[in-house]
Image (cartoon, rainbow over all chains, first blue to last red):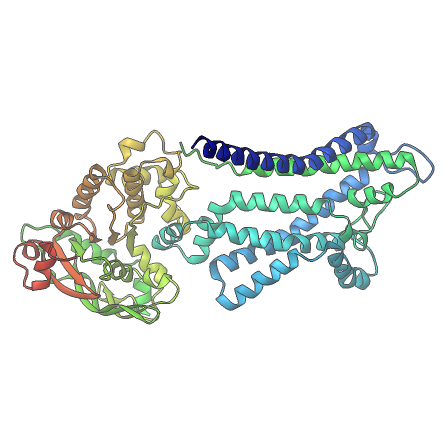
Length: 281
Length: 281
């Protein structure tokens, strides 16, 4: 009896220990990434980093102001092109979809979310850059939007499915037309969750480099228009990191830190958004 | 054409004339029905759930629908405001007259029907994103209507359901913060704010405790003065307490329909007697 007891305790301790070790192993790279990026990058963050343009090759100093603005611009365009169709497609799948066609759309979305991002870069390059004969912020925005689309669509669909059927019936029972019930009741009930999903999708694409290489390209100067090649933090990090200059390496770390910070802020605000608007207790 | 026009809501004259004659001392009759189902059949896919029901609903009375589970009671009242067809694969055949107009005529908009024939569901379903106040007004707001004096309307609707004193200080709290019984009364208030002519109640007390049930029943008594009510109930004592007329359904057919006192004291059908005396069901 006591032997059994000890055996049981032992197995329990072993499994617990294993889970703990695995968790730590998963956390170590995360911690190291944060540690390295912070310790190496913090030295490069100063006023000039946010306000000045990159200096020409050979000169030290300067900043990444244009890449910072460029990233905001690209992400903004991506939201503009990606969120409305994504959310509406999700609404279609959850609320109106015919069985066959919806299945097809869902399947394509799942496949699309697995497509390597560089493929999407090449796709947008062929579709837009070759035709307009110019790298542009538009093209970059479209590439990022295409990348966001499947995530936004599927998140919206899943969250709309969590809205209880009884709320749809309540709205319809009040003589509310279906489109209005979907928009003002169903979508509104799911809105905090959908917003979280969208934020996470934005955070995901904000750090993408590959799709921007052939679309927004890069630019050493301030963006002058959406039709111009546009600098972005990820591409700037890539360019600086593979350069032979120590000063540029330092700047790349600083930009990486900035990017991690932006993604962190997006994530935290997404979590805060989940809190309900009206107090329930 | 005439049908669709009058279903836009120009029925006040008919309502006023019936209202003045309501609740005379004589026992209620079904000579002047507010609604009348004629050979009403309802299907889920290939399954026939209602097998041709003809049933008048007298103006300003309470009609209770009783019968064992699966007899088609809920389906029947969901046909009275065209909520049955909301479920995928559901279909209706036959007629339902509302003030002598068939609500299933091809030119009738189901949305209009539902504004005149309100519904309260089995489980309280206030809108979780809305405050108590917004919940009461939701029927109007979601239909794009601006009440002239929203504050007065909220108070009137909440007083009608005897909820005002309990919630007047917390009108800006979430509707879901209330207890189950309060939520159900809030849902009734939400329906009443639209001033429907008929109120359908699908087992409105099945999720409530006895005290909350008693309050809702008291409420039904009061509402009869102004509305025509059809209530589905599993509870025969409840039918006996609140209803002027009782209809007994069995396996999708109407077995018997008469004054409640007649049904419960000297039913003409053996089946009815067996059911109300608890021999089956």
